[in-house]
Image 1 (cartoon, rainbow, N blue to C red):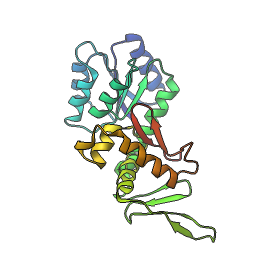
Image 2: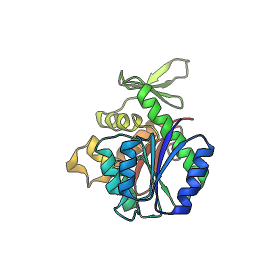
Image 3: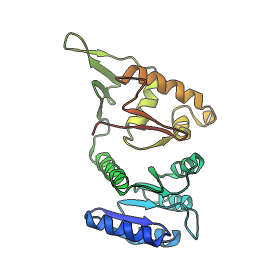
Length: 234
């Protein structure tokens, strides 16, 4: 049974989430402040954390930092803050996804299922998996990208070293929202953290080479104001 820790200071929302999650066979623990959340996480280590940012005793980002000091548990931020700066701060602190209030229960449940699948796949998958983007096959072990050709065989797709590095970072974290800052530091280094043009240019190049329709990307998605996400086929 998947164990969920829900952290929010709204009693009605806590009650609604507890009822809905238990009805779907989740084991649910709830906390109304950051101190209780960190204590419960230590006593009953969760499989998923659903966390509000506006807590009475401390900011939710502090709770994320506290959790990330000792656990890689998936964290879904649940908050009424709509500004992209708040979202980016939470994601940079270590959150895996962000749902804005008001939200639909089915959306939250879908995010939880996706994050659970991703976590399980990361535990079970080989170090160098083969990833498919429609007809395109990316072999992360062999550093090869191919697609079917007209004769029924396959043709190679050439990527530059930077394109390959960016693609590899994104594909190894399917479904996770990766901030611009994270990708810039991972691929180009901390000196380039204020140069998002690099990221936009290379993402456009990858889409032209890999997406069925680069103008309407299906796999390499943009989250406006925040970053990018690799969305695999379901």
